[in-house]
Length: 261
Image 1 (cartoon, rainbow, N blue to C red):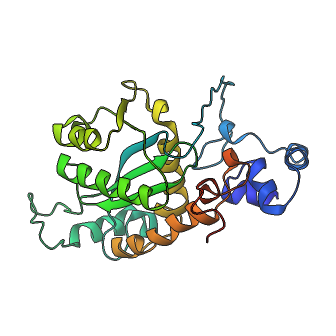
Image 2 (image 1 turned 90 degrees about the vertical axis):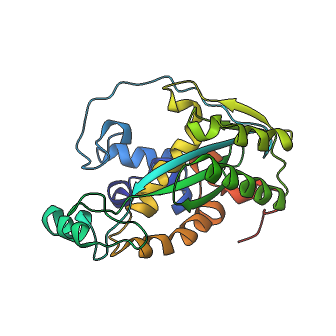
């Protein structure tokens, strides 16, 4: 139990669901062994840091499709042979400099041309069910095409999208994106400027994505990491218990997917 707390950084609720125990029992055991709150420790090192208690106001839509959170996450791509997380700064830097990306000429000699992977997400507020794709940019054409595929996917699993929430990024302010939502009769909602908490559910998915896929293990190349994405997303939607859902998976809250694995 303490090992899960330290190695996986799981909270008492998730540990309890995993072990089939009562949450209060797990909390007492963790307290007995001096385990601090996760918010009181540094995410990377686990070293205790000061953190004051905050008043957290949570909300959740009543039905799947009432609100879809949409966002884009940029991740630096991994050079062939592995980056600095595997080999350290020196060897990782040499791998980055030696990396050659087909179709992307170098603008500056000797400078890596790895670029970024752009992960486009659509997260249902009620169920946390997520549709996501790894794409090459965040242009309006790309974001609009992704949104069209996301809407089609949600429709295929019986989810009728009523509202979509995005930040104020240029691709989401474009007439092309607004026309797509208007065509489907979907209301477009915006996050408050400089307040990513407004889109908190997709931001929380981004954190989970980094901890359980992007940086979960050392990858020898970007293609190896991309190949693992489909399994991660399926596990997230169908198998992984969510503390906010009382241990259930997102698929359990989608009527057409309940009981499917």
